[in-house]
Image (cartoon, rainbow, N blue to C red; front, top):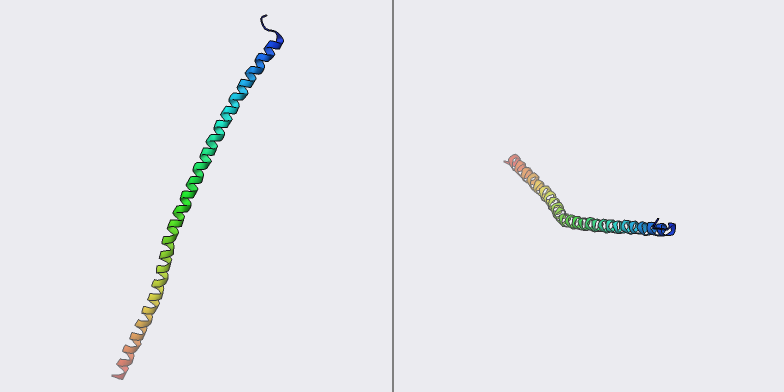
Length: 94
């Protein structure tokens, strides 16, 4: 026979413990990989936020330039209208 029932149970328990240890090691490795992936995603979000901030400056400058252009265009139109009125009034007088 060789092994007693108690010895066989003991052997099976040791085998089961080894399997459980291996499962725990694999889980820990997966958790480390997930943590690493989450860290990488976090870095990507930080980079994106930085890019958006940089682009916002350019957008703000464009907006300011558009407002200035609108004001300048309105002023230029008033000058043209005044010049047109002046020219018409001079034509009536002469």
